[in-house]
Image 1 (cartoon, rainbow, N blue to C red):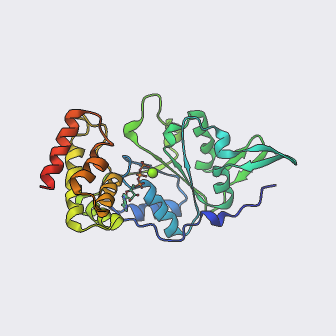
Image 2 (cartoon, rainbow, N blue to C red):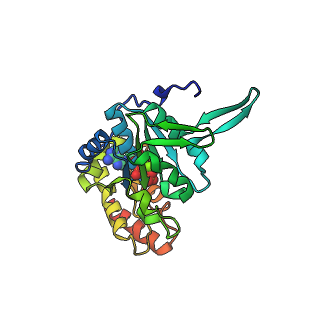
Length: 270
Ligand SMILES: Nc1ncnc2c1ncn2[C@@H]1O[C@H](COP(=O)(O)OP(=O)(O)OP(=O)(O)O)[C@@H](O)[C@H]1O
Ligand SMILES: [Mg+2]
């Protein structure tokens, strides 16, 4: 017996703004039509989550997102018995809800979860499309609309933290990166409501920083941070301060790199 639950709360009503980088929308639609599990790879803040939200909206499917972490157990995904005044009651976890009611389930940063947690997705992501609830003695057969999507950032993984091949090879994968400069400027413009010229300059700074990746920077400036800088500028902060605050200070503690980027800001906004 499952609890009263309304999947409609996970339906996305308003179109999430998403500007395509290439043919990812068509690729995802084909994967969804075949109910293939999809893996989204790419650096932080490049649009993976926004893309999933947009696609769930476009396909008219509810979206259940789970942020994975290393303390997460299989029960956190699948569900558990709860004790309350009336005794024990089973509570479906987010993965079970998605499978039962036909949502797209997005496991964000799945590589953070321990491998013994990750394997619970195996029967859902092959021809079986089932989820055994061992503690409850139930085998959930996934709803026809159910799809599993996972994300991870390949750069951050350590040797200890990688997905098993048997997990990886259950997914079709799409690689994301920072958008092309014109596309990114357009995103920054639309998201923060600033003028195209300022947006273009912000992207120029990001290009400089991204070239420093591997040369003192672990990660370049994300599209997300560009939107932050643009938002501050839109609130009246002078670009040089906004960029220092939103683009440089978050990503480095190294004084040399910081100065290099500050100089880039000064020359772009000279
Ligand atoms: N193609 C895009 N269209 C519209 N907005 C975008 C796009 N790419 C990035 N953005 C903007 O960048 C922000 C960050 O994107 P998002 O949260 O999807 O990143 P992410 O790849 O999921 O990052 P993380 O790995 O850290 O979760 C969004 O909130 C949005 O403002
Ligand atoms: Mg995300």
